[in-house]
Length: 304
Ligand code: MLT
Ligand code: MN
Ligand code: ZN
Image: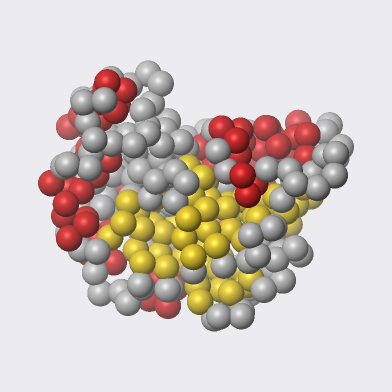
């Protein structure tokens, strides 16, 4: 299967429009060796012709314009996008649904909790019903039951349970239910090779780690380098963990989780604009590289 990284940054993107932190100012002025990045989304395909969007970023139109594989090829109107699958109901993962309205009806795979959020608290799905019926929602089953996507018959999908946080607008902020955030495990039945994708990982559960241990490619939460990164940068008091993101460095961090795993590629994704790994000359970036871990960038193609 093929994976295309459409957007590798966390909410806000890099640089963030209203941010003057070292990183954002540095990439804007060209002082830092760093690449700008759009907000979080990837696309998955088994044949290069049919693509499932995983998350719909606020930057989706820019992302589609940059990716020829995802542009119309046949007929007067059409798209290689066969549907959208959501990891959570965070704004950086769902705002792009509004931009897909001209293509409705489209299949939308989401958990019961995300469906509830997008009908009641951020009611995009109710609004979008007025565009040709809107999205055809398909509920993602629990981790013990795999599911498929019609136009991708060779790919087997499974929910990966994990704990992150519910969106800031959710009545469950700071006490999330299991389906508020999930990871995804995709296996290609032709090769039996698999990828695990988890852009929001706050607390790994035993089940999260057992999926991770089986994956050939891991694309995982690289939001923050340290727990106190926002505070240290002068951008408020919120910790990485309180936002539902395990920091990359330090005891119990993402690097320590990845270290014993056999995956042939380990990729950090959903990177916040404050994260020092965005600076290609930083000690943090060197540490990641020395451990054989990659940092996702927009346009990155991964063959699994
Ligand atoms: C998150 O994952 O915590 C989000 O990127 C935050 C946001 O979009 O504001
Ligand atoms: Mn996010
Ligand atoms: Zn910034």
